[in-house]
Length: 198
Image (tube, rainbow, N blue to C red; front, side, top):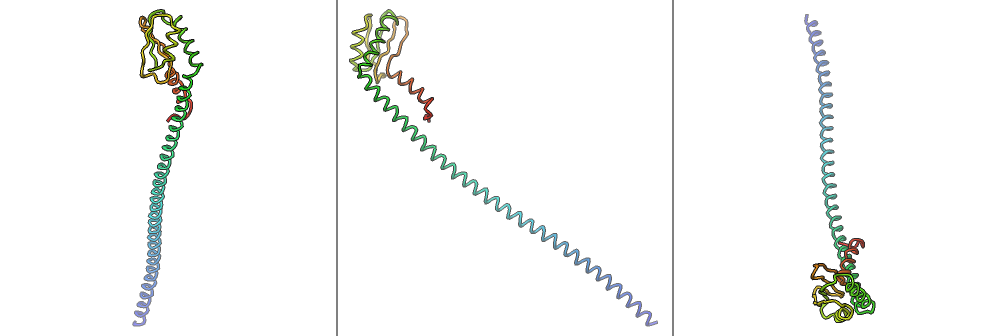
């Protein structure tokens, strides 16, 4: 009977070893699967961390780049504005100087004489107040020579270039024939059409 018991013992031992080996193989597979899964998760986490770090760095670089670009644009715009302003001031100074020369010319006298005669015949038919540039002897003389109706001549500090304003005191109407007013009208047109306005 000892042989039978020994065979049974060997049989059970063999079954236990085979069962244990199967369990060990299963455990090794499970361990490998878990290990593989954990490594995959770890790799994904590392990749995600790296990607976020890269994105953050790229975003910071973009923000820095945008800030630099904006500073450059602001600087360029300031320079453009300054140059436009300088150019406009230069043009206006040149025009003002030419108008001051025009006021000394015979063309100016002819134009003012024509306007004074027209006002004398068509404007008011009554007492007129002429407003002229301070110390403008030319226009004062033209008014005295060519205006036949009752009038007064008043110097106006606001008139800087020349010409005159005529005010019909009875009707309360005025015509502005100053070179200053013409310049203001042309300045407005120039600002609107020159593409130099700031």
